Image (cartoon, rainbow, N blue to C red):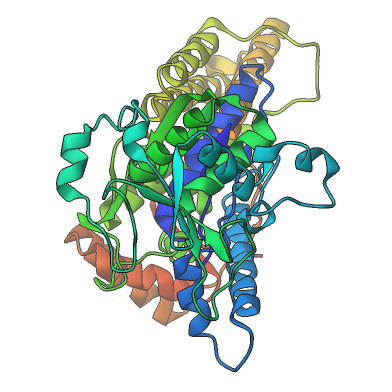
Length: 483
């Protein structure tokens, strides 16, 4: 499985987090289904945006070195965010700059002409599918009969929006760059066509096939990459004689309050900020992502985050409460049919194109089942009327019911682990609230009742800045201090 990773020129935003999370879930579920998964996610560490960011870096110095520093800084930021979200690292994380020219240290790679970007470009030129033009190299789109098939676009439709930028020497406006001639002071590498750097699309074609072979199972990324990036990837590969990916998986876009996320609109939400707005709980942000099908668009809004928080809290409260019934380990007993049926519902939903909203509903069903059994257990544990003592069969029945409640909790944890949920048992210490805290809590409740979520979230963030977490329960807000 190959997934297009980030271009590392800024801190990751919630759109990056959603995509990374979706493919983490896919990977975990395939492994749950007993597939052996090799997961490759690349880092694009040379790009116009990285160069622009490097130019803004203070101080004098070599631009290529500044680009490297920018890329390393934001790669570290990306890794830190994924760790916060409990998203597993890939098995292989290649960097674009390590695959531009043949690596003399990698003897095996140098034996294969298309194991580097310059090598694959040379192969495409040999096959008369690409041509040099003033130091650039372009792919000749009209020579590849299947172009547009992946994104379901015709050449006539594409031609309408195609244009030639100043300085380009394309033979056809539809042609795209495989290699870009060096510009003054920009990072560049030597090639048979002169100094320069690769086009964006050639990077992923090379890195995916180097590590997964000419034919592999799954290629993933955001739907915004479908055209032109993924269309050009498969075109380059198949023009070189590679079957390439069997299945393409694209996640839907994320908006903020109904608008496209943009710094100019002031609605650019970093993952750090999103976690803060989720009450400091990464699991709440992930529950929000799970609430929509991965191929569907999803809108980040206060109401949605609040609903995800409450849903997470309901699951967590049951899990924590169930621990009081855990008995010393005994012989394994097959789960009751009600539990097995809900596990089957979960698996059926996930088998149906990873229908996470339905899978989450199965977890909710397990909580309802567990709460129902716990209510019955509490009734059984009340002192019997008329002074009757519990019999040995009563004791056994109570123990079995306790075991069933714990088994529900363990099942929720097992299935939740496929979403990376409930992995950390958080420790809290009690909080003595000040009069100011009490006033703020009252103001927050009043804001929530009039649906003023902006004010409610501002107050939550004020608590979070003091390492205080507000959890909304049926009995009102509960404040805890994170250790």
